[in-house]
Image 1 (tube, rainbow over the protein chains, first blue to last red):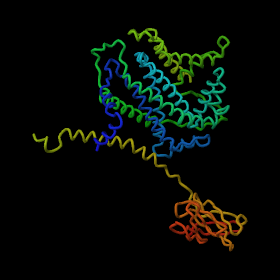
Image 2: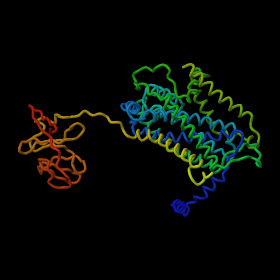
Image 3: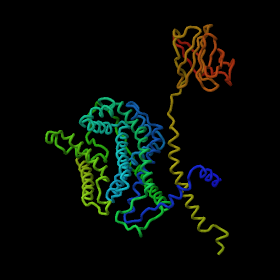
Image 4: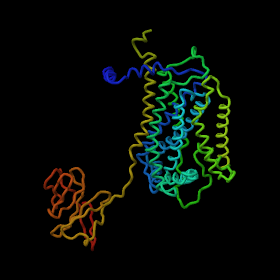
Length: 354
Length: 148
């Protein structure tokens, strides 16, 4: 039965060559192989997001009158509703965290260098999309914290010179954050972003499969230890996924996500309004920039700064030419360390001050 | 040592432990999900009698759909000035029936079922008559209740 089925496919599609390819594919065994797993962990958490997201859709209703109530119903009445929602929230946060680790490990090992420039670029697009996922999903329960976080977040978009006003209206579906914003964010979160994300993720994974995993730039070709991708690496990957799933379950059970109180546009913002932790460093930096710097509005300066820095970060494979020649650029290592320290510092300061 | 041929050897025991663990683990994942998929029961108020209409609303030879709890009912003022009420759910496949003045019959548009003014099946696919309710008129209000 199994054989005939396999044969049926083999006669039509090159199944065996795929299996053969994955068996021949080798993963370098070097000091720091641990970093090779974080892309896979991010992928696993994304799969968890898709599954729990679909489950949440079975009970979630959008609209300013219903959203909060439906999430409340889900949390209090539906069997294991609290669990599914907590896993979705925790998995979202861990996914961003694991994407951060994946990104910085690729940066510091210079794995983005030729021929993997586009793997880096697609990865960065996925990273930005993950943040957009987080930002749009945060509003969906329509609670107070999310309402004001969205107000502030979209306000920041509004100060971008030229296109700010247009973007603000596009995002909010009007001048203010209302039920119209909620509908749009819902559309972004469950249709637009997943669609784009899936396509780019497929390209990203295809690149990785075609080129194989990056080896350290100065590793000797001849006696580099490797392990087969299948089954050795895949099994290790699965084991780690199992561990991550258990961590998720523990977090969701012992630290279930709260719902807070319902958003009310006519109530003053409560103290301690803050964005999700992965936006905190930008949020905090914007607070530190003075109102006017050399005649430019502080906020605009901050946003332009982050925009340019982000763009340079995405384009780093194209101007790092020294790694290709077998020498790691010290400057880029310092830049990376400064970026990591800056993000960590600003995040901590943001939490202490708020 | 005859452990290879009779009695469980180390490998079978390990396979059972691993397999059992896997089954338990899968069950642990699917139990919450399956429970989650079953919506919790939302208690509904049990309705025994409702005000379906006022006398002025329905002249003779007319009918209307009213809410009987969360189910539709049909109230009919017959041409010979009687008041009748039935469940409006067609016994065939659950469509909502309507009163046809031109035929003096209850009719279901989905599969062309005809019921008489006693709720009995005249023609078409329904397997049984419509459930009849009791009609009481108090002043100008028409009350419908379930048969005891």
